[in-house]
Image 1 (cartoon, rainbow, N blue to C red):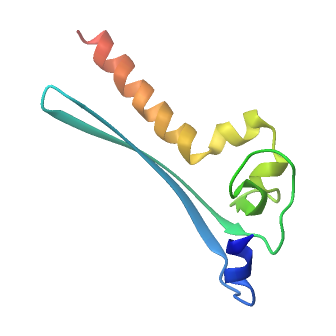
Image 2: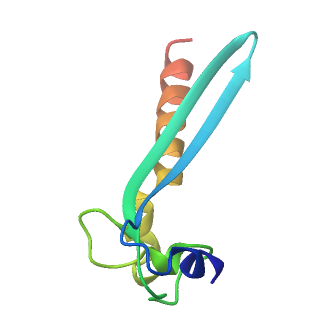
Length: 97
C-alpha cells in the first residue's frame, strides 16, 4: 500500500478521516461534518471495509476499521456522523413545516 510506504520510518502516524455533506436549496446552505481521529498502523489488519480501513485505528479502539463489524464501524465513522447530522436536520426541518 502506497500510504504505508510513504509513512515508513515515520513515528507520527496520526490520521483523521473527514466527511463533509452540503445541502443547498432555495438559497439556503447547510454543512454537515463528521470527523474521526486515529492513527495508521504499520501493516494492514482485517478483511472488512475498503480503502484505508485495514490501516486506520480510531482513537479509543485497538482494532482497524477492517477488523470491525459494519455496525461497529458505522457507529463511529466520519460518514455516519455527517449523515446522522444531515438526517437530524432534515427531520427537524420537515417537522417544523
